[in-house]
Image (cartoon, rainbow, N blue to C red; front, side, top):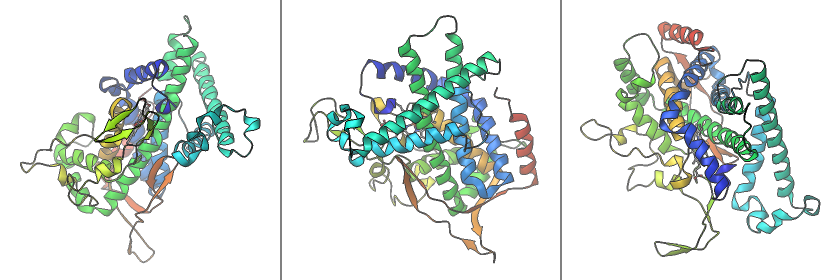
Amino acid sequence: MISLMSYGNYWRLCRRIFQQHFNYESAKNYRPIMYEKVHLYLSALLESPDNFASHNKMLSTSFTTSIMYGYQIKSVDDPLIAAANRSLFLAAGLVTLNGSIVNLFPFLARIPLWLSGPMKSRRVAAEAEELVKYMQESMLMFVNGSIKSGTAVPSLMTDFVEKHITSPASPEKEKAMQDVALTTYAGATGTTIAFTSTFLYLMATHPEVQRKAQAEIDRVIVSSRLPEFEDRPALLYLEAIYREVMRWNQSLPLALPHTSTEDDYYKGYFIPKGTAVFGNVWAMNHDENIYAEPFVFKPERFFEENGELNKNDRILNYGFGRRICVGKAVASSFVWLTMACTLASFNIGKAKDEFGNEVEPNGEYGTEGLITHKTEYKCSILPRSQTHRDIILAEKDTSVGAAV
Ligand code: HEM
């Protein structure tokens, strides 16, 4: 996991690869895949709206495996995905301070596994490592196989392997590519699944926000089509919803833990070298001095009185400084398209019981690994009209395979 690596030459090599592939210009290359996956998501919602949680997972997972390996998953139960998720789950449990005694006494990581006795965390780490190896090797086999059979789909790994068929890359570069792909899987899936789940929950519980956003979409997109990236600058209220969903809840409330590399002072506090430092994103996003009534979901807070969006467009959820989320341009486009197309197509509301009474969705949050996410809840997702239903079905037909 590059996000947890110390600063150094290898980290810089990996970060450079990330930046080449995920900067604002490169992020545009993923748009065809985003359209395809989001349009498929809409048709899945149309078909079985009650399974929206599973569709959310499918949307994020299939997008990431597609851009990283050209690997098209059929379901979220795919064995490679199960292995990747389990390894992340195991590893995430170890990286918090109380996750392992090794975090307090790092020399314990170097004693042989057979001597580690009751140190459960060493065995958990070994299991996670095995699963990661299995996932990386299987994905590489898949990529090589698809290139040989001529069925390869453009992706970060297929492009890399194809480029180095005649002049093999150095083992370090090859390892870096594999680590980049795996770290991206870890960085991109849980966070975007958590976003979509919170977004749907907030739409179901805030009908007035939803109607305002739909009115804006209908005003901007007059012909019978789904929203496209070119529409983004004109959809100001939707932009405010994006900022407010991000502010209201964070998938990584403390970002990721990092370690100070030298002694430092901050506002009179001494921070010795080697201190674990967490950025409290949650506290910043709920600072009453900046956000009045911070627990209220209110996209209007991002507007000036003249109706323009205000300058507060920094999404703290992406972390800070040198370690800031390197996929934020991709993330912003991906979740924006998901929100825009979902709101353009569906009315999201509270589910009803057998007597037709609305059921309040549970508002609880849980933690899985490092990710904070909405716990299971019910909501109703219905197409806004027959025309909207027809558009979804038509877009699904034109999208499938279009990105390839
Ligand atoms: C709502 C969506 C997302 C949120 C809130 C988010 C947030 C974050 C945060 C907080 C970090 C850690 C920053 C730190 O270490 O302090 C991170 C790292 C990372 N994110 Fe994102 N992320 C999102 C989506 C994505 C997407 C879609 C991608 C890829 C296309 C991505 C790729 C990565 C990678 C590769 C890292 C590790 C970077 C490194 O270690 O240098 N993220 N993300």
